[in-house]
Image 1 (cartoon, protein in one colour):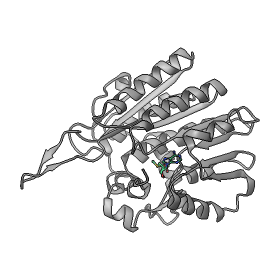
Image 2: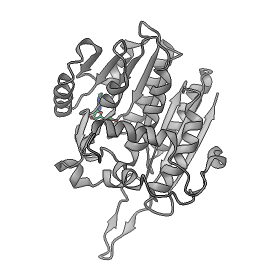
Image 3: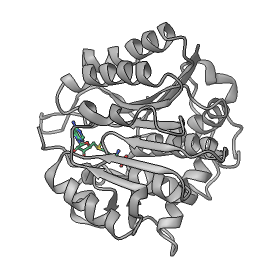
Length: 316
Ligand code: SAM
C-alpha cells in the first residue's frame, strides 16, 4: 500500500495543474476576512528537492514546472484545440502568460528567491504560504516516512496551533473537521490511487463531507489513465454534485497519448501518467475564467506529443 512517494512526481504536469487550481481557489477564498479552514486529506511530505535523488531519478519536474519556468519568456505557439467549452478561450499566438499560471509561478518563486525551482512546495506549504494568521490547516498523511518529514518540515515554520499534522487515514477521519467553526472550508483530496478502492473512497468521502457541510469547497485530483474506476470518477462526482444541487467545475490536462509504445528493441513501454483532472464542488465563480485562459497555455507548453489537450466543463 505504501510504495507511492510523491517526491518522484513533485513538480510534474499533474502537480502544475493541481497547484495552479489550488492557488487560484485559495486566492478567491482568502478575499473574505472570515477565517478559512483548509483540510488536506493526503498531504505528502510538504517540501521537495527537485535536485534531489527522487525527483532527479524520475525527471518528471523537467516536463512540468521546470519546463514552464524555462518557457516563461518564450512566445506561446497557437494552443491546441479544446475538447470542450473552453474552445473560445484559446489564446492568440504570443499571448502573455495567463494570470493563473503567472500566479502559480510567483508562488514557486517565493520558495526559490534566487530563481529556478530547486525547492518545490507541496500542497501543505503552498496553502500555509497563502493562509493568514487566523486561518487553520489540517494535514493528513499516513506514510510513516512522509509523515515524519512533513512533521519536521512543518515544525520549522513555528506555526503553533494554526497547523495540525495528523498521522491518520484522511478518508477515514478528515470529515471530523467539517463544518469548521467559521463555516468556511476548502478540502483538497489528493490520494495516490495506488489501490483501486481509492476511487470509491474519494466518492464516499465527498458524499459524507457534503452531507456534513454542504457549502464547503471540495477539490479532488485524479489521474486520467486507462482504468474503468478512473474514467468513472468524474462522472460519479458530477452526479453527486448535481443531486446535491451544488455547482461543479471539471478541468483536465493531457500532455501525451496514453497508448503503449514499443522500443526499437521490441520492449513494450508504458507512457507514464498522460493526463489528470481536477474536479471541484462549490468552486469559486472566478475559477472558470482563470482556467479557460490558463489551460490552453498549459496544454501547449507542457505538450509531450500531438495528443496534448485540455477540457473545462461546469455545471449546477
Ligand atoms: N497533496 C500533496 C501535494 O500536492 O503536494 C501530494 C499528496 S500524494 C499525491 C498522496 C499522499 O497520500 C502520499 O504521500 C501518501 O503517502 C498519502 N496517503 C495514502 N493513503 C493515505 C490515506 N488513507 N490517508 C492519508 N494519507 C494517505
